[in-house]
Amino acid sequence: MRILFIGDIVGKPGVEIVLQALPGLRRQESIDLVIANGENSESGSGITPTIYKRLISAGVDCVTLGDHIYRKKDIISVLESRDNIVKPANYPAEAPGKTWTVVKSETGKEVAVFSLMGRVFMKPVDCPYHKANEIMNEIPESVKIRFCDFHAEATSDKQLMGRHLDGRVTAVCGTHTHVPTADEQVLPGGTAFISDVGMTGPHESILGRKIEKVLQATMTFRPIPFDVATKQVEISGVVIEVDASTGKAQGIRRIKVNERDARNFEDEYED
Image 1 (tube, helix red, strand yellow):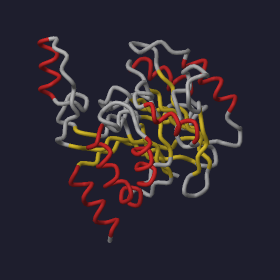
Image 2 (cartoon, rainbow, N blue to C red):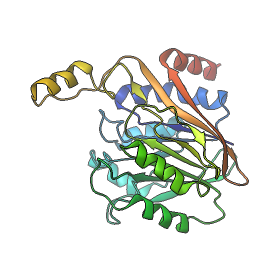
Image 3 (cartoon, rainbow, N blue to C red):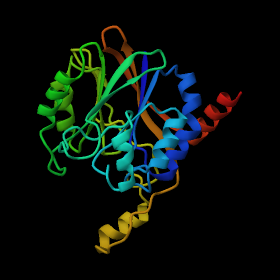
Image 4 (tube, one colour):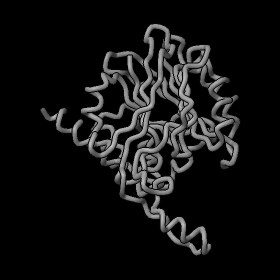
């Protein structure tokens, strides 16, 4: 079984390349399930019901979110009514959204998906490590395949979560910093891990924003809006090989899809 996880989708460029490439990418890579972090998909911060629906229609099976989850308040109705989108599980119980969910792959295999927020250099939230333990007890034992999106700033925090959940989940994949790391591996207990899968959006940028805007604001302290960039749009993600009978990971590899690749995937899918 193969799971594709797509890193933080940033703005319209990120959304559009996913819509263009995903159907063909799923077919070429024999992907059984697609999970995507969509918290920056609306103008670089937040997600709307319209974007959520477009991502699902394109082939995303489950959407994870992070610290910008409520920037667009109309997403709350989706969080409260849909079963294939989750909030950071260590947010307060009163915060809208599900702490974890179970979705089905193309072959009918059940996959539990949850997101956690780190605390190092992030806004105050409940302990992600204790919350992870709670979730492990809540997910039915029959659901062997379990995926964690750890939305955190510090690589040390992310590596620690990988070790904390090693052998108890299929994968721990980091998001939030938008820069892919080269530490992908299968940990001793059978959990696929990477500190950060990178972002899906314009890579000629500062984390998805126009370089000149960020530089100007940094040097002048003026309140300049960080507009989403438009050039060198790429998908960043990982493909995880899974033993569906045990839920253990057998491999993890980084993937990058540029605009030319996306057009090729689109053409092959239409053929």
